[in-house]
Every structure is written in structure tokens, then in C-alpha cells.
Amino acid sequence: MSNKLLSIVLMVIGVLVLAGSLLGDAIGIGHHPGLGFYQIAGAVVGLVVALVGVWLFFKRKA
Image (tube, rainbow, N blue to C red; front, side, top):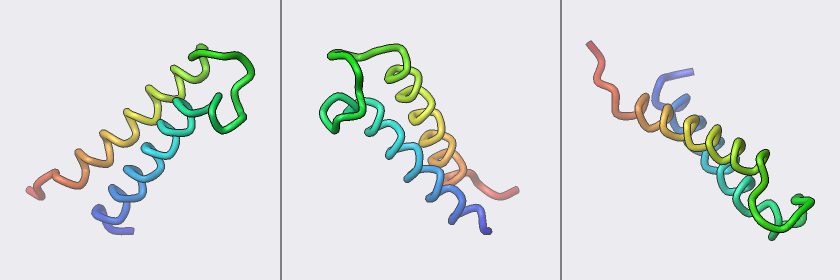
């Protein structure tokens, strides 16, 4: 798998995890109203994965 394809896959997965975590209550997978610990943790993980994908996408080859 090329670096460009891997970076795009990471960005998509990260954004999906981020959105799923933040919209958990709205889409029916949240147990309590408001943001809980697992939703915040999922949002942080999703953001980090997406940012790693962006970094890989724009990283210059040496």
C-alpha cells in the first residue's frame, strides 16, 4: 500500500471515529446525554489518527 493511500485511509477512519464519537447520542449509541469519557476518548483518538493521516499525506520524501 502506498503512503498516499495509507494516509487517505487513516484520514477517513479518523474522521469517522471522531464523528461517531461526538454524535454517539444523536445516532443512538450513547447511553447518557452529554459527552462521556468514552466519547471524549474516541474523539481524541479519531482526531489523532486523522492528523497522522494528514501528516503522512503532506510529508515530503527525502
